[in-house]
Length: 118
Image (cartoon, rainbow, N blue to C red; front, side, top):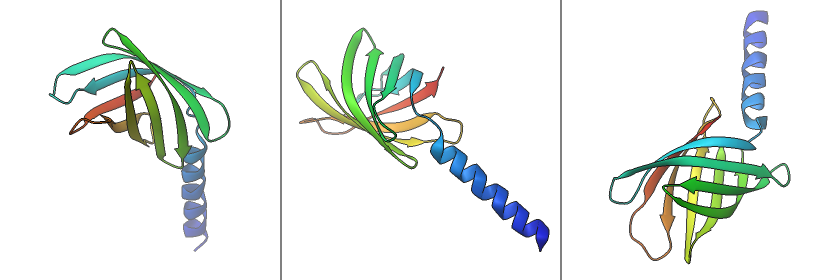
């Protein structure tokens, strides 16, 4: 019983440390567009509070800026790229990478994106 209690306590600590992991920093970007073509680049997340941030992407020769927020393992960002407004929703993985889907207002479908910490 003592081993079970210790194991559960350690599992709880692992969950807490993954949830508390800082999301701020620089990431390598790998994504797919609506048509399935791929793109890459870099994203920088700058924390503005424990749950909010700004994000800047440099991908495929273009840049975009947005605001972002984290809630446990959910991470989302609204962004502007030129005149287009978009939304991306990521799931924070145990290794610190972010796996997500993105879209642009007025367009059908979505792209995918993975942010990997540098």
